[in-house]
Image (cartoon, rainbow, N blue to C red):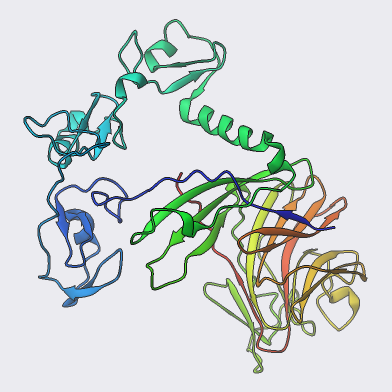
Length: 431
């Protein structure tokens, strides 16, 4: 039976506000604002400047004249629930950053010395926090940045070299993330795959371009489990909200197609990340690794002794996604040349919106909803090869369990119906 892996326990937080430069992703310095209302650091804006008479905003791409810049939006006074600037006298402005080194919170104006005075540039800045004192070491009045596993206590760096010297310590952020992930994994309902992610449309922060980071655990049927970083892009109301998957932590493996293996009817593009079947034969030179009959192509990367995850986007009626040993034959129409039809290769075949898996000329039909995006997870040491249907959820289509003896090369078959396969570019979200 299929294991349906749903996403849950999303921790949402806003990653941008009006005082964040969308180029350097930090608080704006020497701020300027485009007519569209987006603000940037003067230096970042200048670096993005082109030599034409038209300029497109780095954030929304709206075009306008170079002269169309205006002063940044005025600062807002602190209201109920806002963190006040500690440096303001009289009526206080809303703080845009808190400094854990000072410790104090600052509005846009009073934050500038942290970017202009050399001695302050190393200070640790964070989002506005009205409880800074609670994050200070009572003894040394320094920020609590370490976690002592020996004493199960949050400590500052001074504590680490004095009374906690020699103890087992980690950065506090790492300890928090470990406990957060462990807590999610320990929940029985997640292990059973029963929790469903709430619709992004229910999020109250749908105004404008808002980036939401979601940290989610996905647990497979195997003992090993991995963390999936997902980024939800909430588009303007004129567009449809969408989920975009970015990375399976360090297991993500960037792949590139090897043109020396490509059949002459296959055209490579987008930096050898996309392969398309074309009727005209390309004038590729002869090569011993090239498939001369089977319409296939392999990747350059040899995967061995590690765990790897990659995704592909498919169009067309007949496609194969798989892996093979280097020794698979390349010349002729024999089964020893075809992905999944010999003892050297394994593959998922997507045909007419249906799935089947193949190895050594053995076929297993898979019943599952069709998705044009396929995820592949290779655990070479464990002898495991998993195929997933990827959409707003991940569905495990099939898992091969075997014992790999050689490096594996990802491979693709592209059918003669203008089909194409693109290796997805996955980028980890900041969190």
